[in-house]
Image 1 (spheres, one colour):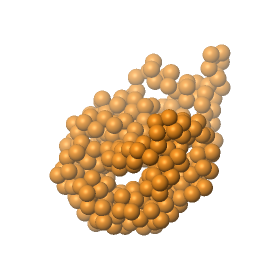
Image 2 (tube, rainbow, N blue to C red; image 1 turned 60 degrees about the vertical axis):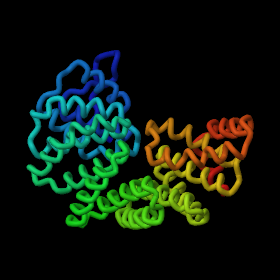
Image 3 (cartoon, rainbow, N blue to C red; image 1 turned 180 degrees about the vertical axis):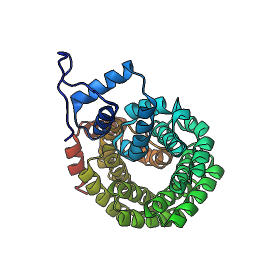
Length: 341
């Protein structure tokens, strides 16, 4: 646990005395610790201007924690910090500037502000290259491949993903290679080449297992399962989704639990089990809303025909009844229900 300092202010139990302590409280907020200090820090930020030192510290934290923020859905608070940083990014050292721009851009992406990320791209990548930050450059290109995909710009998406993948292969970075392959799989899925998409996702899954990233494994297995579902391989799709469900429950991440439930709802629909499917869709919708992560364009494209299939199998009252039952399930109840197969 981090050290805390008592305060004499009766309206707050802690004060934030130094830039370093403010930074530590900011970091701890992502770990869901020190709730009282977190409130004090946020109040202090509204009153105090960040010094150049604090801008650099927060920029470095943003680079370190963007993936954690993404996984946990801490978009609003992180976005405020990173926007404050990039509003004065000229005060940052060159090797930090590109990474700060990336963290700010990814938070915008997480909030579905896809167009809002584009003005950051050229400066971000230029800063990475000037600093010799090849891993940062690879990540930026790969992430913008995802951005362009959501903007339905397949040409730019494919070009950036190709460059990002080449850099990651040169670096022999398994996680980065898996990230690119997973994004390529989504792009190819949208283009209708399901067998190739399945192969890309299969390679991504294997690499994520090697890298040991449980959150990424869940997502990649879900995406692979959806391509298999669309090709009629319900058994393999269900196996991947049940495996992902267990991992998502282990890491307690609602957005990934929601994806597994959505996939299993699709399997149930394909099996003609419309009541189970509708209930799982309801549970998934509630979890996704609680996670704060919006549905992606790829997911929307995959889900809509499956939901329409369930609607066609049930009358309106029955569909809404099961959906509502699903929304009312607790996270533990939803996991248990989904695990019944």
